[in-house]
Length: 190
Image (cartoon, rainbow, N blue to C red; front, side, top):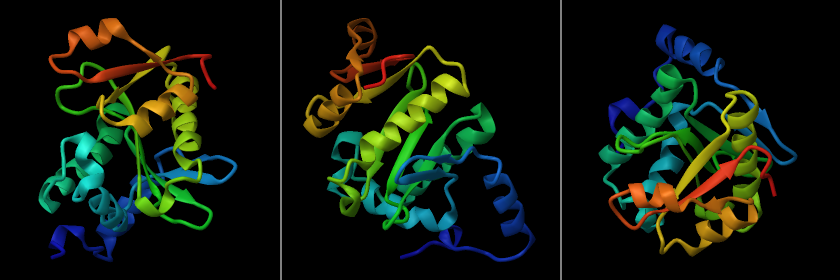
């Protein structure tokens, strides 16, 4: 079931939303564009969050919980000046999402990435992760950013290592669970 809040509503509100979305930085890479989320991006977001693909992110979630995550990550742009981007690939619109943002209990901003099943295996994750990381360092002037990774998520661990991130034992000790913290430092690009 699609809730009313998930549906595009033409009119002045939609035009205002488009203007706000136009203020989110757009990042173009060789094959991807990272852009502001739009309401119609929620379906691919929910396809990830409401499925077993979310097993390493605390899911699967209900559709309502996925909506809360989607809107919370999107609202970070207004609150902190960074947040969720939708990843558009050349042949796969809404291929996934990359985030410079927070979960409520995160001790610091996180660099996170999640793709639709259809977009996997094409190198999009690393390309989008590196583009968002460069934005964190260049536009936001951060010296480092963390990625919080479930120890069972071997694909994400391999991605972090390919991207040049290093385990941060001090940050891991400060957490109350077994989450791995991969630290990306300015100048550590793969």
